Image (cartoon, rainbow, N blue to C red; front, side, top):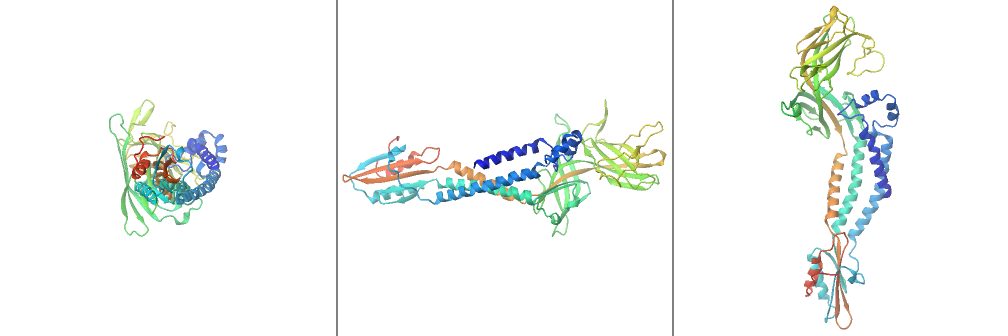
Length: 492
């Protein structure tokens, strides 16, 4: 038990970095780790070597967990065997000196030792739900064995809980996706924006299903001190799974995920996805569709990039800033409200090599301008233009154009499969039931002994509480009354 307590303390201490440092694979803040790396370029490599940005998947955290599992097994199983033997054991024989118990009464009767008196005492104790053993000279009774059953269930539930958590960590997975309205996701590992499988996850045989984000709606408080706070999010999706012929529709909301055979898609966030059309210098459409912009603040000011690698005679790129409700301030344009009441797309165009065919892989949210030049106007200043829905930015010199067609929304989904959650749920329920039972029930013993000495019979009754609660006096009083005596108001 001492070893298990030490390992529990180590596990709690090991979880501290997971709370203080950003962790990879967290759906609510996917750029937290790259941001930390950019802000702390010297410290980041050392922390990363120690797995401090994925604490719960680190080998040292797994080692502590496995040691705890082994220790708990070695601690719980012998304890369960001991409790099981205690449940099945008959009440022990009466101690020699019953008078040392707080609940004790004694008197003499001229009648020699009588089996009838023992039977009467036994019947009175059985009415109070005692388990009774009758011998030639005494009655042994005990109740509250359900307390030991509660202890047994409590100890076993701890082991089951560890098994359930371990099953989720070994066979489950977690992934993140961002879907714009009208886009479809298919549950294969290559379709995820971020995918974190467990050690034994069968990534080639994930649950077969797909779903399309048909529509996303969000409602904000329009006035009052909480103006701009979200009031409702809901994503209308249509999905198909193995065995279903027709797509089925479902409304996904926070805490109401899409659940397909244990694989759940949770709605975790949202943002805006402008729909743009890019034409190159020849007038050909080289890029068209939705582009996801990432929110920067509570007013959903968002940034993103638009790339046109097929443009001729040179590739095109745009840095964009989306203002859902554009307003002018002292420091320039800003978004005054998170809803799209007056959307503006602020674009800065670049021409040149996007660098997609050489160098390290690029993020779709970043624009590498090392080999590109900003487009300038007649005064040589970089072109920066704010577009409303339907507006077109035509680049100087016939280099091309971009049109802001409309403004759609996107939704973030966290998709997870945890095969151990049902086991953990059952273990949690058993833990509460066992703990409540062990605390709510009292275990206690009562003895009735008859001692004959030739002049009659001495009847001794004693009771003992095996818990911190005192023994109810009525247990003794009922036996005394059944034997024809007046119970004492208080016992020493």
